Image (cartoon, rainbow, N blue to C red):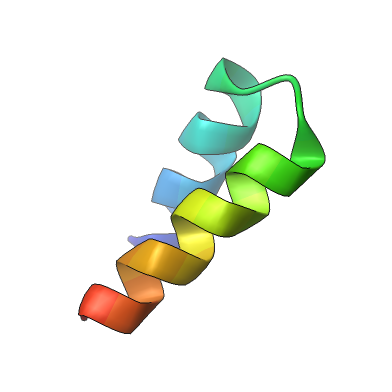
Length: 30
């Protein structure tokens, strides 16, 4: 499920850095 979320964020955010930040935060919270 984490991978799917990452893909969604990547599609929503055109910036790779932004996607990485969101993904990192999600993983950190979890």
